[in-house]
Length: 206
View 1 (cartoon, rainbow, N blue to C red):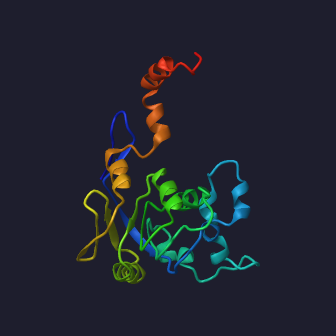
View 2: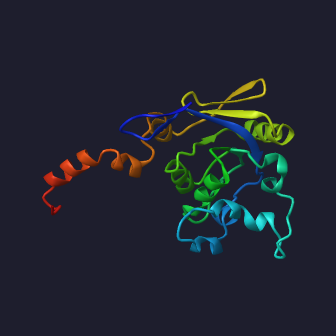
């Protein structure tokens, strides 16, 4: 349902894929991507370090974590609980999840800055009540090959034979559906207009 709109960035009306549930409240950005992996020059390659300390022991042995399970290896819809992404404002956290392959996150609630950083990458962060999220987590765990559709435009999530209502922040929904979420790409696609505006500003030297 994503398409390219000339003069803007991709319009994201909906996204779909298999799901992976990461349970627990107050999962902070340091759990999502430990600070020692923030020394990278680019964000490329960050995906493999997602939830690293939750996935591996100090001896690099695998723990039982959803991101380590083969059945969730290609999942793109992450289902979480309350206050996900709290802690520091590091943009490395959503960057790591995006490079792991996560395209949308459904949760009870999100830290505001984390949600904003996700939006800058075109990742919807949609919310639902605890019961709805719990049922969706159980579905993702029991049906790792089943598709979950996150409909941003209509504020619904569809899975199995169910369709449930979710909430998408108004500003986030407008930015995603209208394709104006990537401000850098938006400026690059309108270089002429940006240059013309800059010429009119008295404090910008040509």
